[in-house]
Image (cartoon, rainbow, N blue to C red; front, side, top):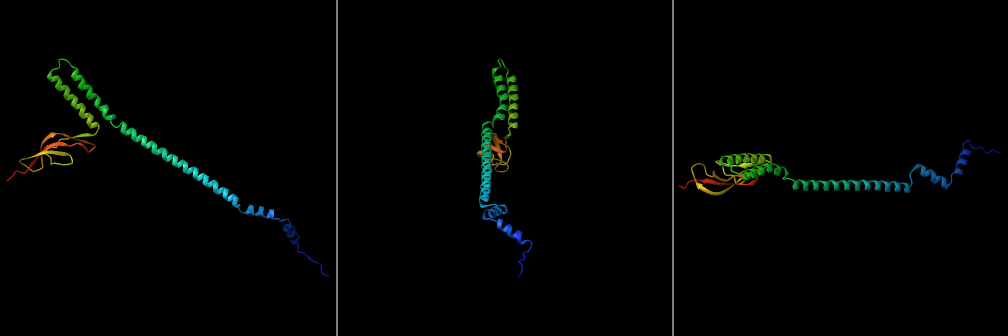
Length: 186
């Protein structure tokens, strides 16, 4: 009769196999890979974080847009402040000239000349440039021709300036009113 010989590890293997139950098998599988519920929970948490970040970014963009609109509104509302501040001394000088009693013609002329210098300084600080095109070629972008007169010289040349024009930062705010030359009839 032969004795049944079991390998030395066989008993341990049988004992280990006997200890494995469906509960322990699922627990071992859970340790090895996350369950679907865990994966779903992690995905929901990640989605919530992304949605929160998106809402914060959207709110920040809205705040920036609103601040920019406020800045634009303030800039347009107070755009003339610098120019108005420069014009106040001109107004003060004119009022002082009118308030002076027994002023001579010479003192009034000197006062008006000083006031004109203040006005020119205010224009310069506000980037307002005078256009006096006497003797220049007629430019319809900067000049407005009132009439054309036969004259010596090249046609379409400004021969009389009726009213000076003005530019604000190279943009025409008032064209110069001019009379231009035209060729003499033969």
